[in-house]
Image 1 (cartoon, helix red, strand yellow):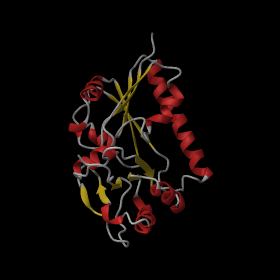
Image 2 (cartoon, helix red, strand yellow):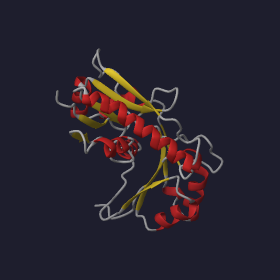
Image 3 (spheres, one colour):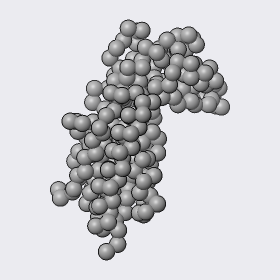
Length: 242
C-alpha cells in the first residue's frame, strides 16, 4: 500500500468565500482533515470549513496544550509545544502510512506564521507533500478596512506584537508601512510605541477581520483592554500615489 499525501491548505482569513477553489476541492475530497485549536474550543480554522467536509471524513482535532498562558520565551512553552507537535505529527503519520491523504487546515497562509509549519518540518521529508497558498489574515484585514497599505516603492514591515518595545520601535522607525499582528494583551505597549513615533494618527485597528464580530476603527485609546489575539494594527504607507 502506498502512503497517503500530506496537504497543508490555507483557508484564508475567516470568510469562507475567501478560500481558494483548490482549497475547497481538497477539503471536500479529503479522507482526513486536521485542524488546530485551543483546548475546549473548536478553532477558527474548523469554523471556516463548515459545509465543506465529506460526511465520512475523519477529523483530527489538534488541541494546543497552551497558547498565551506562558510566555513564548519560557523553556516550558517550547517543551510543551515541541512535544505537542511531535505527537500531532505521529497521529497524522499513522493516517498517511495507512494510505489516507491528510489535509491540515491552516488559517490564512500555511507558510505565514502558520501552525502547519512544524508539521511540515516533521513530515515533508518522509511523505509526498503539497502546500496550498491562502489569503493572509493581513490581506483580509486591510481590504475590509479599505486601507491601501503600500504605494509605489513603500516597504512593508510585518511585526509580531510580542516583540519588546525597543525592538518594535527599531523596526517601525525604518518602515514605510507596517502590519502589527498577534495583538492581544500587548496592545498598550504597541500603542505607546506608535504614539512615540508619531504613527498613531494614521494607524487602523482591525479585530477579527472578515470573521463574524469584525470590528474596524481608528487606533483605540491607551486604556483599551479588549484586543483579542486575532486583532492587528495597520500603518499604511505614504509613498507616491498616482
